[in-house]
Image 1 (cartoon, rainbow, N blue to C red):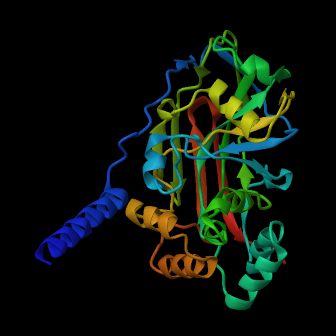
Image 2: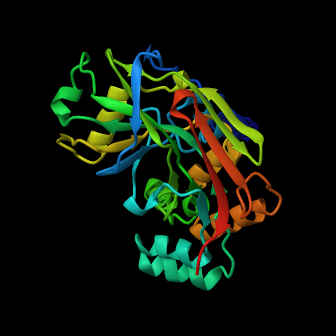
Length: 329
């Protein structure tokens, strides 16, 4: 009997240790920055930014931002990829603060019954509005996915400034953890959720893995929230485009396609890694997740609110200033 108790105690200790390591371990496979050829901003030309044909987005592409969202990062599959809806493009100087009805319509795009369930359970739903300064790529000439497979291929792209605005509450609305990226896509694709700069930088003599290495900065009401070098990105431009092509089974890209390439650390959503890992392990229902997010937002001042002024900048790509305003009825 004593041996059985000792064995049980040992197994319990091992299980506790395993759970501790799962929730609190550091990132043993933390991705390193990509091997990039930094472009000289002076060795390129600026021209007005055009209108996109299709807009794709990339998440968790900077090591620092991955550290903010360890529960969502899968080192085997790489950064998640999503689509930004055409109505997200924003050349105005305001960002709409989405209403409860707008958020529920976004859920209904994926699951109308789930949207009705959330509407019945939550009378108030704050969007948990977040900012993300990013570099965007604009395809200049059509090319195939087969060309992207060649390590020496130089994608014909230009670079521009973007703010990948996100309603974080949509992440919590996912009924299962496996649905997170689809709901994240809805949270990033609302009207006006892609303010962009005015110029496109075109390198004159790009090389394989050419990248515009500049300082990315976000300021909210004058306070610096994000400040990091774009050279800290963990995937190069060819890998970024190849990942998008795999995710959506594309034969290639057309002139005018855009890819928003991800943000460095410093976003408003700051959830401890062990909580994110625990949620991924337990996979609670949407009611619990949304309730927790709303409760946490009561004491979280970093999320954007009507009246906030957001400015993103990226060296020669200029800056974009936006005022958050209540959504028009």
